[in-house]
Image 1 (cartoon, rainbow over the protein chains, first blue to last red):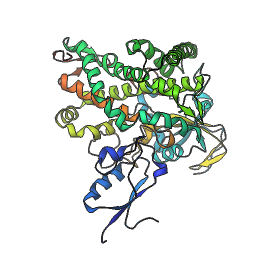
Image 2: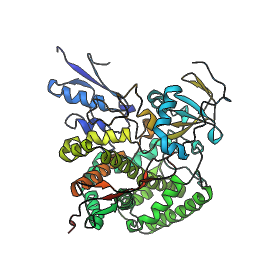
Image 3: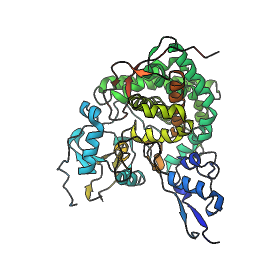
Image 4: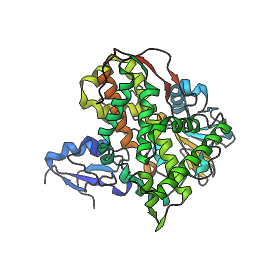
Length: 71
Length: 402
């Protein structure tokens, strides 16, 4: 898909700051411990803005948006 | 940068001193600009990391930067067992946190918001008709204290006694070791009694959850239970009060900030993060170096103690544009007020909710509130930078609790 973006999630480095959920709850859900429950993969075009906000809020830098899917 | 021998000191900074309390941000900015990995000659020698990247890296490297209880600058007199999990390294660290996390999650904090608002209403009702108060001792201090006591299932009407002990441990530990030891002994006694009561008669509180919890297929020992409860009291009672008091000073000094907070409820999340960044209560926390290693051009030795200065990192001009300015509209605000890595503050979600409740209820019910006298800080800001007395005046209002 042209211009698709992919979310990378370094889940084992998530420490449960929950900032992604605070700034974009519609995209970033949490598990019962408070860790991010979002799955890596392609981001629907209408969710891209929410994804960007969440990525920018993560103090651990475990979220990233990329041009192509990571392996 | 060349490697500097251990004997050389870059500063004589004592973070427990009155000079630090009065000039902390000037001192940290100067040190950060000159020497972001600095050796102080105070307290028999310790390192101060003050740049964002050094604090970030060290926080995420528990293998080199251990949290063993010997890390304190200085250590707490009379403390015999580790505080859990802040004094614990992986892999046990994650095991303890697993027990606590579901009770401290954003969902758990959200579920408690109504109760916290009711508590704020009752606390404000006590003074709302008089037109004057000490916001620190009558609202910002008791609310978090009563919250953590309720969570543990302790009698929260006794918050005054608990907070006296906790304040001694935090603010007097460097200057009055004997008084601190006495407070720690009394705390141990009071916590043991509460735990014993819960063993006999289980309830629905967090203390009972801890007693029932298992780690490696065994129940927690008494020293482990006390280590956890002690840390919950320390973390719960002082830091959120400190943040709220620090933030209120800014709001009082800046009419535009106050107006924005009153008029735009949507700004609450962003403003909370900005106050956390700009007015960080926990100025820094310690680590102990596990092996000789070079770090950002400096030679660290096994056993060296390090302070990770969150307050300095949060004003690093390389990361935050105009770091000394409160700006609710920062595009990115990845501050380190709650630390980073495996030791991320467990109470962060509750802290945010309590902060919002206290600030919004204060401004809603006392919109013309102003500081009316001498603001006094706790003498020692080395662990928690916090306001002790915050006298205010406002147009009297009506009580709201039914």
